[in-house]
Amino acid sequence: MSKLDRLLEYISPRKTLEQTYNLANEAIGSFDYDKAVVESWGEFKLCMAKFSRHLDEKVLKPREPLNIQLAEYWKFCIRPLTRIYGSNGDITAFTIASTGNEGGLYAVLKAFAMQRAEEYTKNEVSSKVYFYWQNLSAEEKLQAADEYLSKYGNFIPSEMLESNGAILKSTFWKVLEQHPFIVQKLQQAGR
Image (cartoon, rainbow, N blue to C red; front, top):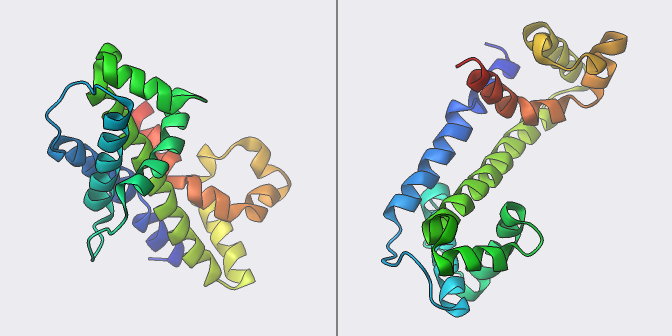
């Protein structure tokens, strides 16, 4: 098994995407919040901060308990909510969570967990690719790109294959970062 094959096994959708999304789903199921809606902005912020910390604990499994104040955790919630619901994502999420419309609080927590799972996965894949890439010589990098091209060239955009794969070779580490996501999409399309 080549170094490239080992990397691709480490970042396979089964070991990154599926595992992380399953842990995020477990976090949703194990989050102890007994209300279907929130009644105030403060309650919403507290609920989201608690859920964000709970999600980090379930997915990241830190060795030590997370010692971050809930007020700080709320700050970590704003960007994912904006990605999910648009420029005023925190306000939109609060409206959904407080009215019970569109699935209420559960739908907000679910969407938040899935957005964060995507972030966790991208970070994990990027760090594994970075470590792999930094430990290759220039010649090994070109050989790995050629090996990848011979094995996976059929799902690489044709413009990346022009001039003997020059674009692929110059951005190969970025291609590797996208590999599990591409494989997952192909698997889903094949179902």
